[in-house]
Amino acid sequence: MGAWLYFAFLMASPKLHILVLAGGESTRVRTGAPKALLDLCGRPLLDYILGAADSLGPESTTLVLGPTHQALIESWLKSSSRNGWKVVIQPEARGTGDAVRCALAELPAEGRVLILCGDTPLLEADTLSFLAAQPGGALLSCLVEDPSGYGRILREESDGALLRIVEEADADDEVRKVCEINAGVYVLDLQALHLAIAALKTDNAQGELYLTDAAVQILSDTDGTVVCLEDGEEEVQGVNDLVDFASAVGSMRSRILEEHMLAGVILDDPNSTFIEDGVQIAPGARIHPFSIIRRGVIVGANCSVGPFAYLRPGTVLKDGAEVGNFVEVKNTEMGEGAKAKHLSYLGDAIIGAKANIGCGTITANYDGKAKHATHIGERAFIGSGTVLVAPVRVGDRAMTGAGAVVTRGHDVQDDQIVTGVPARPFPSSD
Ligand code: UD1
Ligand code: CA
Image 1 (tube, rainbow, N blue to C red):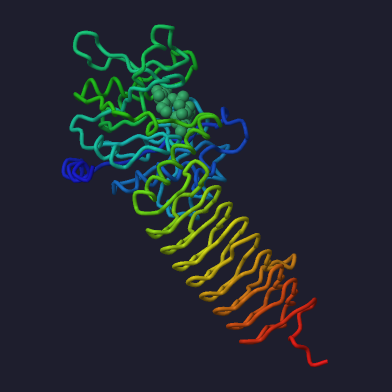
Image 2 (image 1 turned 45 degrees about the vertical axis):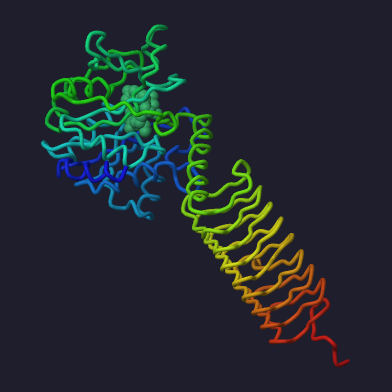
């Protein structure tokens, strides 16, 4: 695939523009919220295709949005690393051809454009750059087991040339049997696109302007290619409803887990392990079943996580740290070899190397208004059932007795032992 990329950069026209269509109303998702922002393994669904597009280093990037979800999607866009994308509004969702029509004013008269759908998050950058390297333009297709819901590719019987793309809604029983589907990815000549979009008609079952009609026309005029992706059913899958969404989550999750395993992370049971995109795990770490690791977490070498652990954003486990069953960790650093093996909540904490966090320890980090930090020193020993009311500090090698409640501001000094509720030095002087 690396060779593909290199080839693509050599061949791709320097003037490759990218257009992503996300102007639909998300009606089939039925939640009232935009499917573009559905959280898919830690990132908004739309972010994946925008990221793949960005990695091609295009001349310009444009995104079509509809008015219904514009505000939400734009506010995410501005706060993200995709803030370089230009937004165009499609006033009414009148089809993919209409979405392109709305964006054309923002695109130059000449050059090439890669058009993508916002709802195909699994498409890989290598596939896109291979497509972009096709001299006469191209369209991506795929042979799938279940073609339902997709546009079907119809070819000339004599020479296999692209004839038409027929949408599910327009297809008769014969056409529905066709298993080669349109993945919704096109590389087209811009001059030809301006002409073909202007000539589009709405004479179809949905009364929409179909981009597919224009694409077929342009590719036949420019000697374009249909690139049929082998074994690509997962990669091309589109998300139209929440059944599709769950399937995309499953595929993305497997892809992420596989990457970790191939990089040396030991997963006892991938089927019950959830790791979001953007998690760093060092080779040799072991993740036991029923564990969830959220975006941004960093796990060091030889760490042990789970079973039934929940590592939330901001968690850093230094080498050899252990987080056991029913432990939730958030925005917390655990030092080298520190252990929290059972039934704990550790939030907004910094825990020193080799500290032992006893079963049932809780950092009470929230006072109803703000979150506060807990510091636990190196080799500290936190007794079972200790509650640490933040902000609070427990010194190096200090100990708390079982059931101690260390109240805010009553820091425990290095080597000190405290017990009781509220916790006081032990043995006490009175
Ligand atoms: C589309 C293709 C179909 C292909 C499938 C691949 C057409 C007519 N059909 O079907 O051949 O197999 O994608 O996944 O192109 N959109 C707009 N404005 C609109 C309508 C849609 O921007 O007015 C956007 C949507 O937000 C979405 C994308 O275009 O991101 C595709 O639209 P969608 O309605 O999902 O098309 P499909 O029925 O999946
Ligand atoms: Ca779709």
